[in-house]
Length: 118
Length: 112
Image (tube, rainbow over all chains, first blue to last red; front, top):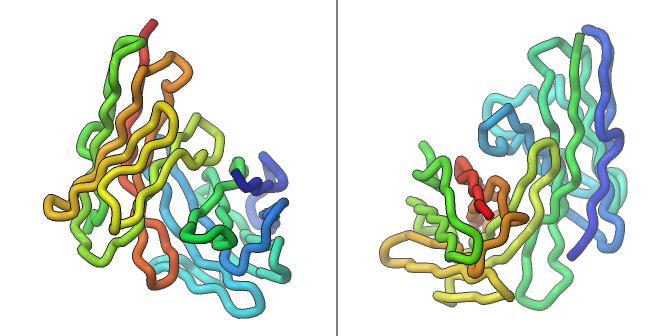
């Protein structure tokens, strides 16, 4: 299957700092990427849809000024958590939508980034 | 409003037997369904998918069944192996943006 990478895999930061997480599709072009958040023992919660060359679409209740998304190319989307606070500590996962195969439309996920805000 | 539901939070199966994971949905606009496997602190791994024009899709030990009238899908794993132990999420999307709506997950434990 298609490969999606995320960097960093984990990060610890002080409250008030900003953290950038990168999501790359390694062997396919992704016009659409998605950012999810997962709390322990809960389902994945979609935060936003990242479209190459245009503004991201945020889900209800997600602060777009806090979670900045940039989809600069067909293989890279970044999520920046601005002025992070302890409640932002979570597992952030990206996915990239692969529509290259006939009849397929599958999202492939990155390995996730564990963010801990002290 | 939980559009995709996995009502069993956990399932325990003996090695070699069949594992059946169930998923129900409420939105009739969903036309594409996927199953993902997830280990703790890792991203989900795509397993198998099915389009609403089909009622069955098979890939090795994994088979997904779709019953549109009941708005129900299931994942069958046979034979189950200890390495299958993980959390399984079903997800659904419509053709209107590709957003995946996930169920809550079912933790499968396959005992040797």
